[in-house]
Structures are given as structure tokens and as C-alpha cells.
Image (tube, rainbow, N blue to C red; front, side):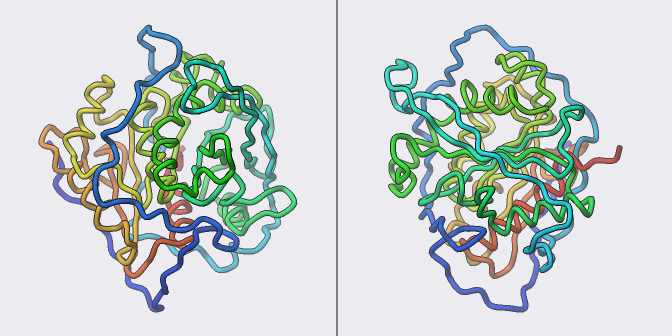
Length: 359
């Protein structure tokens, strides 16, 4: 039976946050994306993998994730400083193709992503992988920084893993920037690039990452990636949230977990449900952890999308605080705006949920 209870959870704040035009874990490099109130999900291209056959998707494993909390947890103050057990950041260089002519393979590009490896990373252990997209006016270094100049969110993840709040995992920090590092600063262009990014993600980035590091993918063919989807997630804040919805649209065969934050794709829940139906997946094949702040300019449209999805009558989306009972959670923070503090906190909370089930 469809659950009607929405986990719309409001947490009071003692301090009043002022508006911030930049979003970054370090110094505010990723500015507010001005996500529109109207739908952005009507544009699109077909998912191109170069293979027409139907993929065999891995069967769902039970109890992979934990329980969504009743309210968002604040990041402990000490987590903003280096941890004793520090993970590492590595630069990954890979080849791909220009986004808008991707299928033609006429303009090859060399791109970089940063990869976070947890403390004690071992080739003898398999790791879940979370792909974390930046927002507008940003690049692959915005969220966690680099090996030489790590940002505070890297320390947050180090501490959370050290304290057992987040299971050791690999975090991949890519960019949807195309031929220029400034592409994400053009709002209209960024919307189009997030709609194209799935080609590069599936054909080039995932094989580059999961062919090099120890993950649950037995191989990096489309079949191998699909078979290991339970151990792969995608998320992002603002325009990174739009990128997350695009990944949900095109790549549901390859990802189980999604973390959109403060950026809507549409306000039509039935449209989102139809994407699921067309994919052949059912409600228990995925989980969406979503979050926003009440003073965020993107909050209203984002919340409308989530609520509209939960209202779809056939139960494609079901509000719940765990995977056994549903696939959709929405948390909100009273007074939070569209900035790096919000982005970091929502991401931290989502990763405390994903893959954190009882062993």
C-alpha cells in the first residue's frame, strides 16, 4: 500500500544565515545556479551506450542502507579540520568526446576527475562508489579540492569514516564542463551539458574509475556496470542536482542511489514516474535521498517536485525512511540558503544513510 507519510522534516536553527552567492566547501567558488521554477526535464537525448540489447540488471541486495534520520544532523565543528585517519585525493585523467557531437566521435577531449579514496584503501576490498557532481560556476576541484589543497569537506568525510558514521567508500568528483572550464558558468549551456553528461559518464568516466580502483564491478562493460548498480550512487547540489535528475533519467540501469539537493528537474510527478516505468524498473529498485533549505531560492520548486513524485497514485515513488518500505525521502533545514554549508551538510547526511545498513 502506498505510504502517504512524507518525511518532510524541519529543523530549527539558532543562527540566521545570510544569503550567499557562492557554493564551495572551501571558499565559495560555486555560485547559486538560479535553478528555474519551470521544468527543465523536457529537453533530452536518448541514452547512448552503443548497445541496443536489453541489459541484465543486478538483483537488489537487502539492507544495504540504513535509516533516514528524523532530522538532518549538523556536521560536528571538529570535522572541518584534518582527521587522524586521512583519506587521499587522486587526479584521474581520461579520454572522452565533445558533449554535443558525442555520438560522432569527431572531437576527442582529455578531462580530469578527482577521486577520494578512504583511509586504508586496499585492492583486496571492494568499495561502493558515489559520483558527486558540482553545481554552476564550478569544476571538479570545487567540492573536495586537490591533493595539495584539500577543502574542508574532504576532512568531513575523513572524520565521518573514522567515526563509523559513513562506510569507507570511493567518491568521484567529475565535471560536466565540456570544451571550457567556464562552461558551468553559463546557465543555459550548463542545463544542456547536464543533459548530455550521461554519455561520458557511462562510456568513459565509469570505466576509467572502476577499471582502475577496486569496486563491485566485475568488468566495465555496460553489462558489468549494470550488474553492480546496487553499489553505485550519484548526487549533487544546485546544477549538480539537475545533473543527478538527468542521471536518474538516463542511467537507472546503472545506479541505485540518488541524492538530488536544491535543484529541480520538473514539477510533474507523473513525468518522473513514467521515466521509471519506461526503464522497466519498479519502486524497490532505487532510493532517492533529497534535501533543501527553507530559505533557499530553489526550495519551492524542488519541494514541489518531490511532493508531486510522492503523490503519484501507482506507488512508483513511496515516502519512507528505509529501503524496505519505500524509495523517497525529503529532509529540509529551517533557514538554510543556497550555499556551501547547505551542500556539505546534505551530502554528509546522505552518505551517512547510503550503504550503512546492518551487517
